[in-house]
Length: 320
Ligand code: UDP
Ligand code: MG
Image (cartoon, rainbow, N blue to C red; front, top):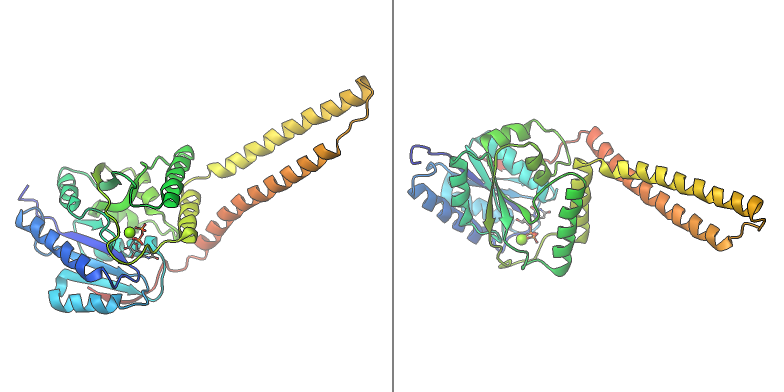
């Protein structure tokens, strides 16, 4: 294995992470040193930090780290907050430009087990282009997050996107994976779906999740919902087909209802009754129609965002 001295980059998205960015970066440098000393990666391996428009001292700290550790620390700062997916994409494309053989993405709070990075590298050397970190459990997640996440993966599976549950953005991507990523201009790329879909050789490594040491989660109900909706609309058109199927089904039901009315009037000679039926049906189908329009609207929004072809993000500064 020692003849394969790959250059490893570790990318870390940071949004208002002044409390943890220093300790995390220093810990990651230790991890790099350890893997370097075992001869598995080259000495010019580095950490690349993406400041996702932080309002606190995160960028200042990144600059100080750069001064202290030189070119082992690289990074970029967005002009505003674009969200964790875009920060990750910027990291992946940033290290592709700078140069690396493989890249690992990890959160700034080091909730993912950084010791697993060495196993990721081993899997990469065995020939995997993607090494996906799978959480052993969701003990550190809130009740709400745990169940909504599980529902999301179940739904994605039903919709045909077979991402393993408890998947995370803690993963290794080879240079080949980065080449493919750079050919996808999609604005709203959902990385978990993307790396699953391209079909490169993938290995799975299980890891333990730690509680967040300092600071608080940067996600809220709205950002998580938006991430989930984006994930669905970017990878599956099954919801649109379900709407069409609903249409056919309700048409069939209305034929049956019409038949009932005819039988009541001409065979049973009773007056077709049903104010209550009418109101219930009206309310039900009114709701169903708006719900379906909402789904179509989600896709429309996705198309709208894509056709504008605006840049995914704007970097204010980059330390190469
Ligand atoms: N993050 C980001 N931009 C955002 C939100 C989060 O870059 O708009 C980063 C954050 O700094 C962290 C990672 O994404 O490195 C995961 O965020 P967090 O730990 O808050 O999420 P959780 O662990 O609660 O899912
Ligand atoms: Mg976290």
